[in-house]
Image 1: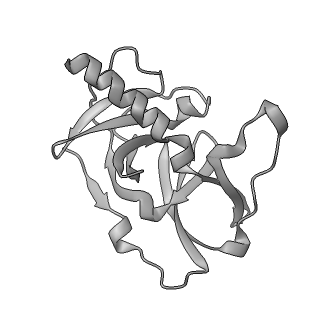
Image 2: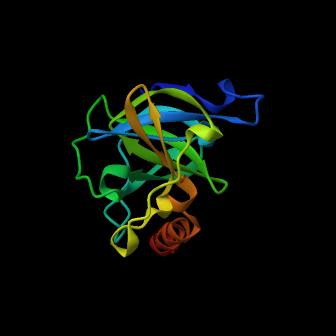
Image 3: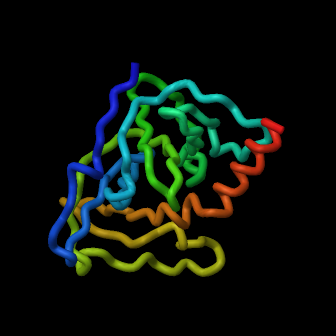
Amino acid sequence: MSQTTDVASKHAIADPEMNEFLSFVLGTEHYALDIMKVKEIRGYETVTKIANAPPYIKGVLNLRGDVVPIVDLRIKFNIGEASYNEFTIVIMLNVLGRIVGIVVDAVSDVVTLKHSDIMPPPEFGVAFNSKYLRGLATVEERMLILVNIEALIGSDELGLFDARTATEQG
């Protein structure tokens, strides 16, 4: 049985200069994403593997009639794979009008940031592509990496997933 939490509907900021982010942990780093993208937070459930999918796509699950791809951010960020257990968290997101689940180590809290609190991501040249980063912020003495979820799991990747699923069903 999975516990769920409806997140985005509980958080709405009237001040356009402020944004709320859901912070989460991967390895030893703290990340965050726009809370308005978050549909719910769930425990990890068994997924159905998709043949020839990239390693970071762990599979799919049926969520109230929708086939939802599950992406392991540890693998996507090249941090290394963790074992899944009863404490593993999946954040269900609305990405480009599609529900996608991301596996994270833990969810921390909701952080409210002013636009002026967000620093642009550093440029590392060709060795590192920072298009997945929305920016950086310091919260309580720790650096928070803000993820651009649409760039991370964009239309190309969702299209790749859809093509593989259609091939398996056809």
